[in-house]
Amino acid sequence: MAISAELGENLEKVVNDLVENGRYNSKSEVLREGVRLVQEREARLRDLDTSIMLAIAEADANGWLSEEEVFAELEARYADGSD
Image (cartoon, rainbow, N blue to C red; front, side):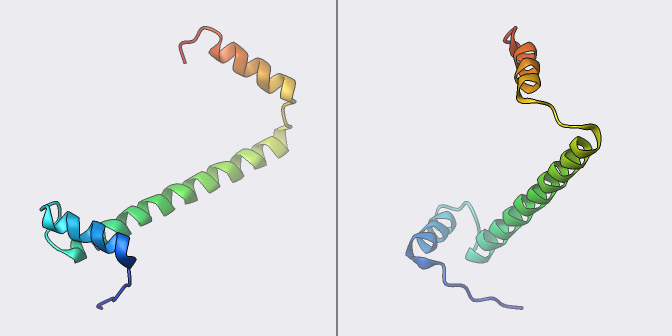
């Protein structure tokens, strides 16, 4: 299925430059790569959302740390400067 997209002047120039410089063979190839990158980013965001939800559920089940506990743990972890 063919898709027509209005990219605007700036993005159209980027696409044209990528093709003219030989980085990509066609405008379609540039756009396919862009869509693949969006898919990867969306997958990472879904993974992050899942991790956050799991962390919240664990904190709700096991209790939250106070800010003093959090800062003490961070200070202990990074005190030697190796992390």
